[in-house]
Length: 438
Image 1 (cartoon, rainbow, N blue to C red):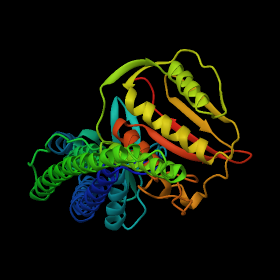
Image 2: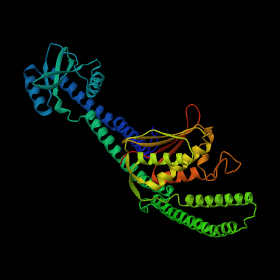
Image 3: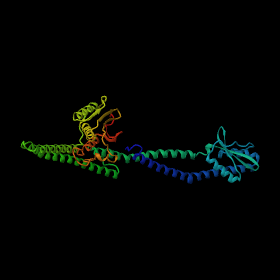
Image 4: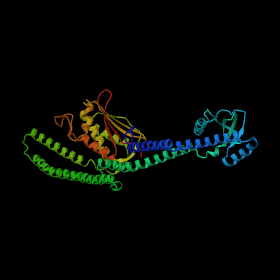
């Protein structure tokens, strides 16, 4: 479920939160296991080995020289320790192992001196320890395989496995939470555009199933409400137009010597009432989509400019190359006609510019006027039904306040976007974006 650019999605924030919590928990658990279990075991193992080495060295010193080779052989066979007398010192460390540090500490504690445990290469990796016993320098070695356990590698493998499993678990949990919400968001968009969405599955966790059930009921109620509104306004329009027709007929049948100015005002009032009723019907049906048609938008722009010019408007339009799109023609024509009508009404008699830009990424109509403009704090309000910046309610200075509301409803129903922007040098730019080619 995507949110605005630069913001975290619910899926990502949930996954990150769960993953961080699980990773921190695993790290604490591993640290506790290493400190309270593995480290004491390693210390005990190093102390046992140090005790065996010191005891072996002391025994070797106390044995008669002729029996020492047999002792050395027995020590190698049974304990895999190689002991012999030497005079050369060991080279320095060339790598670090935590176990050697523990072994050095254990040997130092048992011999009372700083004893070095160093690594050298001799056919295979061996650990060699120097011990001073009875004035003799003894060297004791054992192969690295004697240790067997590799706690750092084990910790690393456990940590990697933990991180991978944690991330997978976090993604699965987050997806199970966010997928129903994504479907809910899409369905809410359909409801906002006036269409009936597909029924959401009322499955999953109790809370999400309850939310889906409530939304399905709400969507049905909204759909029924919109249908009732359309039927109600259609019935009202029919009931009102019938007496209006009788009044018009009565006006036309008045004697020829009747006051002509009064008759003209009556006719104008009747036309205004008929126009208002028509706008009410259009507003009530604004959420109904018309069938898509393949049209050339540049030709439509030419037709709109020609019709407006024939009605007395001063129109300038820039010829655009052919721009063929498949969309709802009636909705598009009505939106552009309303935007053009607003520009004519509030454009202070200045020329109105019509533009069309067409690309694979977006198709945009622009209607530009040189009127007084719209204050920034009023831009959202002018799309509300019956809202007018000019409050006199006079037909000469403004319409019914439904033009932009109808245009907005039609745009929402088709997935288009209307913007009212300040024009450089004064005036308003009404921009209709249709989106790119699907």
